[in-house]
Length: 324
Image (cartoon, rainbow, N blue to C red; front, side, top):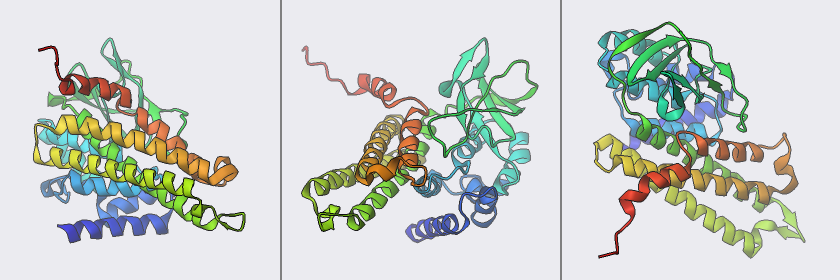
């Protein structure tokens, strides 16, 4: 299993390094590596793998700030698999696995519901032809065009989805709860982004000279980089723990997913800020990627609930009553 996951990481990283963020990248990732069908059972054309393998892909996409719609696809696939609609699974999943159809999901936990209508900013909804929408506890399949929404993050396409008398098909069974999966999946992506931001920063301080020596030799920068490294490793541990809990069905999955969302969001923001500061003036130019990492950090921290929101969600489970 370790060797297979290492091979998957190598394949995804190699393709991302050679293809670049072109329009055909997602199709190549699906056809050559099968990323969209990783957690899809073989009966529907997938690989029958788990969230652990999907998390590897998300990490690699996060490293290069890829716009590939892996996050939205993963959530939509899981929604279909948890639904009771066999016809929808057989009709949609094979095309998703082949990269011929992009499906994403929007639910009231990631937006707002007013009078039974979902509105909000959702990742990958603009790239999708099919959106699975949760309204009043039911899952609906709709074919729509979302409005592109300008956000701080220029590397991820998001869209605003407003539904008003939009024709759709109600799927069988209640709508699944996807919050924990979304948090764990996003955390994996954030780990990849933070790790790459740190790598690029270390390379820069080794190469950039001031006063006749690399700025990386200055003790204050070494201490800051060491702290950033420790934070990235802690974030990776939190991410992997959440993924493992979800894969195993642990009762701790919800708590660990929230911890991962908090830890990875805060870590990415801190590491991206260090990246900008240590790169100096070049970091705020469009020619350099440092500001893109910072934008991704702040924008992704708001997806699926802010860190503060998840801290509030965890508070009742961790507070100890010392009154007795």
